[in-house]
Length: 126
Image (tube, rainbow, N blue to C red; front, side, top):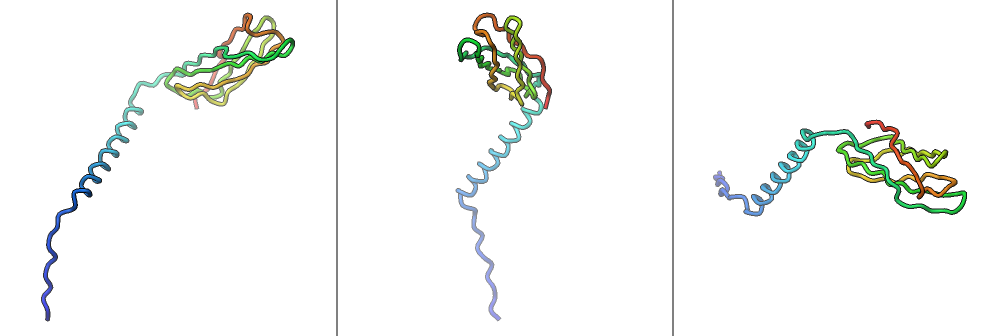
């Protein structure tokens, strides 16, 4: 009966060690980002509407309003209201992400560049 020789012991190739190290670093980096986001300071949304552009002519003006969220939380169902004299127009955005910007369009009969007052009426937290 022939005897079996044990296989010679070989070391893993250097490339295998490098790839294993890179995998470990990527895993640790992802975990660090998750922990930072979970433990970081959370604050409410800070919604800031501002007039971005005006289009149209006599009797049918459109005001493009840029809505920026400078807070660290997402806001949902954001209600923006514009008041121009005795006219009021409003719009609702589905959501504005933290650090994000969205645009709504409000319609008026008068030119909104003269005295448009914008305000955020409310939002919900998703």
